[in-house]
Image 1 (tube, one colour):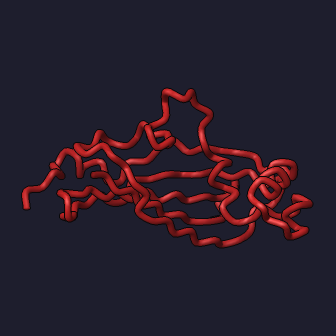
Image 2 (cartoon, one colour):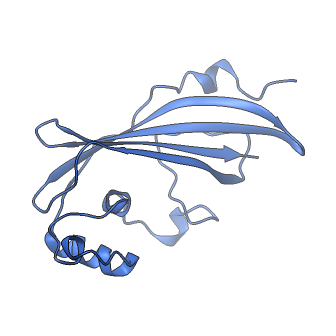
Length: 151
């Protein structure tokens, strides 16, 4: 199989986006809990953030034309890939402690893998981004690994 993965493309493994810092508020936790149907009192009262709260917390506020056709904002630290059609490939989140109101969280996103597989309709490129979310003091809150597939 001829590879689409050039040494130049693979040299991007290990590159990171600038860290993003956000303050967690009780109001944001409550709004997220209501919007996502989390009905436990600790979530509705804003005392603790429900699972996946961090996802929207770190989304950039961008214009519609900055989104890909599937509604995803492509990080500027990612390389230009030879295949363009993106699909979700998987998601794994390891929680180390809950998120609480008043937490100042810092997210660090790193491109950790790029690999190619042969699909039934042609080549596929997979890439993985690992996001480490820490408190401002450096305590690990969660680790997230996202896999995207390009065809």
